[in-house]
Structures are given as structure tokens and as C-alpha cells.
Image (cartoon, rainbow, N blue to C red; front, side, top):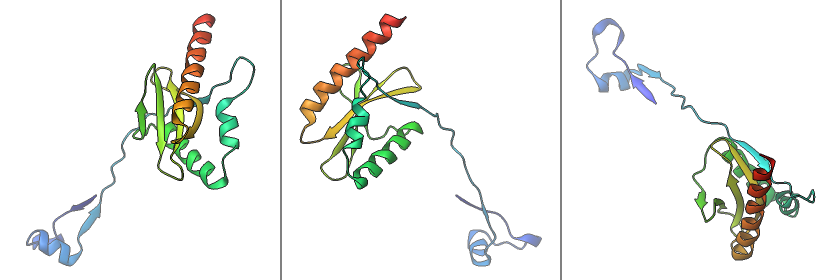
Length: 143
């Protein structure tokens, strides 16, 4: 943001004078944001569905997904859509329409459950819902 201040010496004739004479001061605003702890779900058998999906991506797609995860960890959930049963979908507008499936465990923890594309969306959502239920059940049993 640029803030205009008066000319030195009191001879300022207002905004036009300041613009013409380049009497501008740069003002920076910093917005606070909440860091979110992003974790990959590890199934009871030790497998990691999100990691398996991520490792199957080509380099360009993996880069787009990594950027999306960074956005999530910085609290930018603008591309996240709530589905059902506490499951959420992060949409990536690239290639075949990549999706990241995740669940929120409170305000500061996000669990990555898997990923997919628009074409396989129904199967991917079913699978992610199953994993999210499994996660919640295991967490409940531990408490």
C-alpha cells in the first residue's frame, strides 16, 4: 500500500503535487496467519495412502501438490470444500483436476488421507471417507 504524505516545507497542493513530486511513503501491512500442522495418515498396517498417491505423480503434478500443501500449512484453505462426514477436498486446477482428501482434527491439525483426480472422484471419496472413519475410531480408542 502506498501512503501519500505532504510535501516538505508546507508548499504541498495536495495529492497531485505529491504524485508529481514523488513524495510517497511505502507502508507494509502484515496479516497474522495461523500455522496448521499437516500430517499424513498412517493406516493400522503401517501404509500411508497419501504418500503412495503422491509418489505416483509426475514431477509437475507433484510440484503443484507440494505447493498446495504449503498453502494448507499456512492456513490458506480457499480451495478446500467440505464433503461429508468431516472429509474435505482440496481442488488443484491443473492437469486432470487433482484432488487432495483431508480431514481436520481440531483447528490446527490437518490429516492428509489421499489424493486423486476428477475422473476417479467417487472412488477416491469413498476410500478417503473410510480412512477418515478409521482415523477417528483409532483416535477414540486411544483416549
